[in-house]
Picture 1 (tube, rainbow, N blue to C red):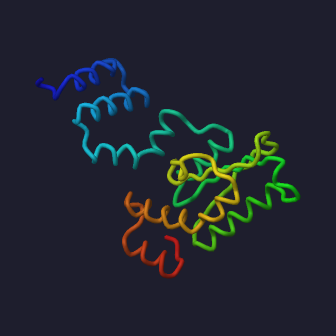
Picture 2 (spheres, rainbow, N blue to C red):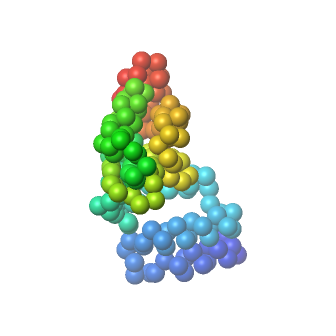
Picture 3 (spheres, helix red, strand yellow):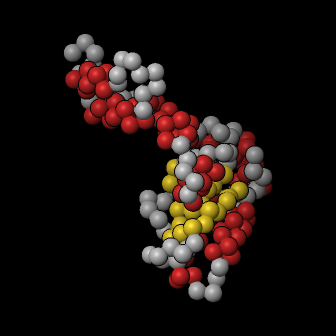
Length: 182
């Protein structure tokens, strides 16, 4: 076909002609159809990934929940947003004490983080970590497992910022060698 396959035709039809700003679902649907037809480039994927925070803000918004707040916080700079759904399994440790521990451990890695707490989570304590609006782990993680991965999380965050051209090679080097965040 002239337009690059059936998927291109379908993706054009999926976006209403009168729409000034198609919704995120429409844009993602068109991207998926283009990917299925092999007409999407790696550059298109990188743009979508890099502009995740802008897309979330424009099309979805950030809810006033620990999840929404952590996601939004991670979009406001070189920050890690953390959700802590605190269950009764914390025992004598308060959610605030656990939050401070994670902030301190990340500060040791020269990272800035904020923890958003939902108390009284009925299914036990779990956490999620966000870098540039994207969840770092594939699923929620318990604090004992998360603490084991703090150094990896910090390293991945720095690489993510570098890959997305949020920091220069020199800034990355300074951050790694001397713990000097940009």
